[in-house]
Image 1 (tube, one colour):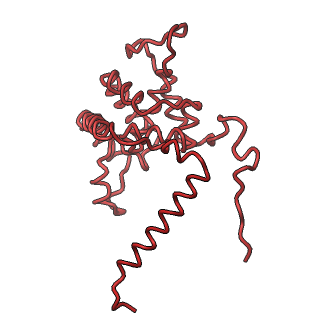
Image 2: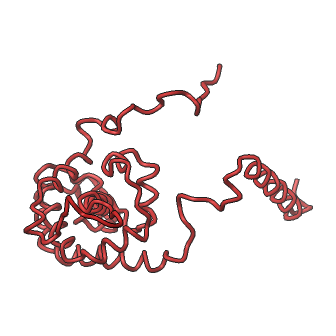
Image 3: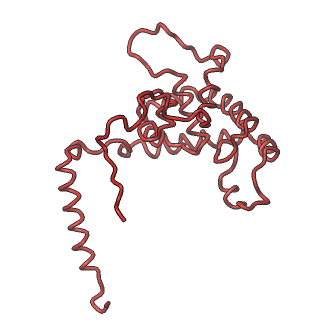
Length: 227
């Protein structure tokens, strides 16, 4: 049977417009519409369309990123940064913006009180729209895995009851985000290699040498009494 081969240099591999990256029924569109509908004056998050000086990332885009990411279990700012490079739904949501992990973490720290309120509303919205599957915003993931039987399916009614503990759940999520970011702040980027590895020939040569070393190490570790 013949093989099918991919072609990285194929023109128009992705749609011309980022808008076409996700389908009309993709759940990510709910998070986009939700944030666009919010009254930012009531939330006390000032949006200045005529802002001058060093440009910041649009607060709406940053809020969308955190809500969508936290809803599907991405607590680490480094992983959120990776998602906006590699995950088409995140690329669509951000309109191609690519803030660094430190920028994402700082936005969360500055707007923690606002985030708590918006996350509560977002959880209720998800239940009303039946966006429960895979959503870790208000469901304890460990309990879901421990009770993963048909009888323990998370229904809307069950999630409504879980919302009674939503304040505690959101506090736990944001505390987890703080802890993860603090732990990872000195670690290497998930979206960039060392500069010398950007050269394809250098990268290929290094991979070849490492594989050769591993092969030699494997030979030495084999028990001589084995077949």
